Image 1 (tube, rainbow, N blue to C red):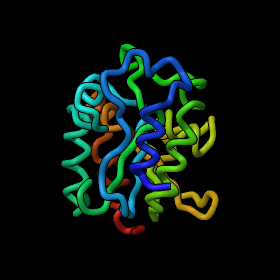
Image 2: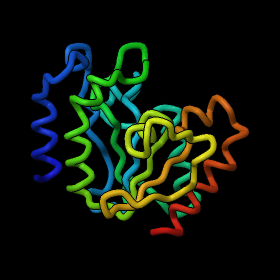
Image 3: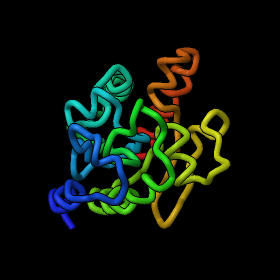
Length: 180
């Protein structure tokens, strides 16, 4: 299924209650043939307003770090979230909301067929790398799952809250660039 067909199906989804309060579906963005697929937890206020993932302050930080290593959404990055509609008050998505959206996310990964999937933060990492996975200790490690390489790093919003982790985040991005 193409990303465009998948987006259409996602726009029609009523699998959880998040569709009732969204302004815009935040499906995904980037190069549809990207080598790197980034996964966040869910859209925030700016993303809900614009319909694109990672467009606020954390998105700016993410783009700056990617560009430092010759990576960008236009060239070799595709980015999406665990859920496609904004959870109220920017809370973490609930398990039933993730369950309603996970099929779309997995289909996006299949359609893009990246070399590496990067979980940004605990919510994505705990789903793909195990519920006990800790980003603070496991970031930058690589795992083969279903024939695909996965890793995790800090969510850019977490870096904004604790700038001391920025060098670790940048090192993880550097390692990801080396892997591709």
